[in-house]
Image 1 (cartoon, rainbow, N blue to C red):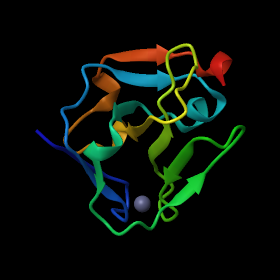
Image 2 (spheres, helix red, strand yellow; image 1 turned 60 degrees about the vertical axis):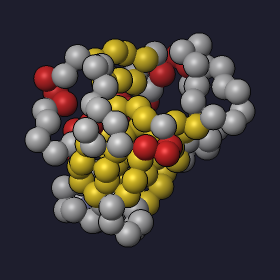
Image 3 (cartoon, protein in one colour; image 1 turned 135 degrees about the vertical axis):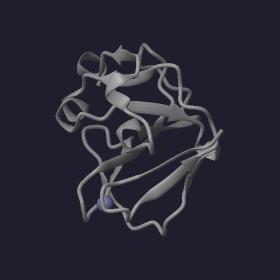
Image 4 (tube, rainbow, N blue to C red; image 1 turned 90 degrees about the vertical axis):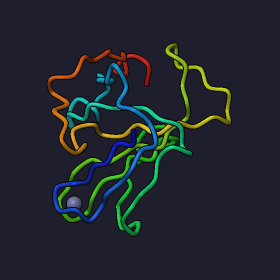
Length: 123
Ligand SMILES: [Zn+2]
C-alpha cells in the first residue's frame, strides 16, 4: 500500500512504495526540534516525487544531510541522509530518506506512536 502526501501548497508531492511505519521518529536535534517534523524512514528506491523537483535544500553542521523543503509554503518535506546506526555510526555508503509524516494524506501523525532519537547529543 503506497503512501501519498504533499506540502501545504502542493508544489511538492510524493509517493512512498511502503506502508506507514509502526513507529514514527521524533529527533531531538536542534533543527528537528524547531521544525517539528515526525519522520517516516524509507529506502531511497521507495521514495518518488510526483511533482517536478522545485524544492529547496538546507544543510547544516556536517552538511551530510540534505533537508528538503518547499520554497513556496515552507513545509519541511523530506531529508536525504546517511543511514546512521542508532549510535551515530555510518558505513559511508547507505542512504535513507526521512519523510515528514505530517504531510501524509489522510493520516494524523500527531496520533501515531513515536520513537525518539537523541539527535541533540548524536549530532
Ligand atoms: Zn509548498
